[in-house]
Image (spheres, rainbow, N blue to C red):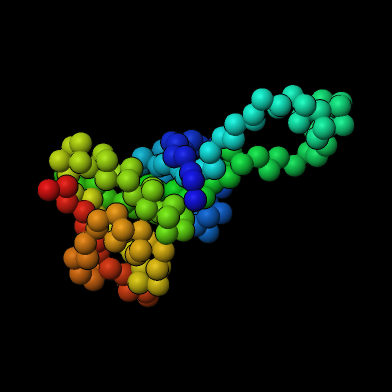
Length: 161
């Protein structure tokens, strides 16, 4: 899937909360306290006939035929949140299918490489998409992690060496 990555803003909190099934207020705090990047559908090039296409879609009135805005630029396919503590970049949240998650992991990895830091990630054992993304992005398993909600996790680490 082709996605673009952009910084999250407070207005994204509702969407992010829906993705990870948490209240928007929690995600609003995450956006304020951490670096949060979103994977969104890329802008489409309207092409040379955009004005003709728009007229056909609106019946020549210039007004949208529907109040619903299903614009692909608004579609969020996943997100990553990360922060730095004691010289390690900690990925605190990661959501999206395997290809999107792998693309999003490039964000904390790029930051870590520039700063000479490692990246730490904890993945629930049942999350095969994130596990696949971590392995494809060059993360190595370093052992079992803490349990979240009774579910075992695995610790992963990326070292820029």
